[in-house]
Image (cartoon, helix red, strand yellow):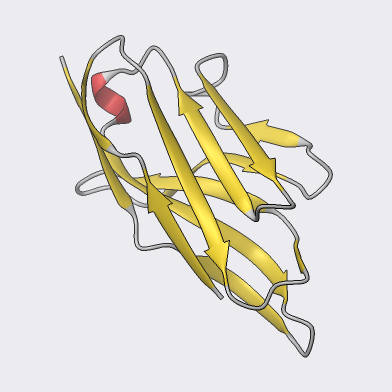
Amino acid sequence: VQLVESGGGLVQAGGSLRLSCAASGTIFSINNMGWYRQAPGKQRELVATVTSGGMTDYADSVKGRFTISRDNAKRTVSLQMNSLKAEDTAVYYCNADRVDSGRRFEYDIWGQGTQVTVSS
């Protein structure tokens, strides 16, 4: 199972970006999916998560500005980021905490990351 992110880039403060992540491989179901980010010199942190049933959770720093969503049929998860700030600059990673591939479970799968840069 692989996760591939897309949609990062450079945007001015106050602007918007939409990140997408697609899962590929033999997949019967995916448990929780989420977005994490890591800024230079800092630890990776949770941005938002969504359960297979659509329940969402957000870091306080992004509440009201970011929206996570997923399409179970398409095996995708997206992150709509509005009102971006310079402090949102980071590499953003997609995560799936458990994937049922039929014969086995795979745990804690990460994408390669996509850079988001917000200029002030």
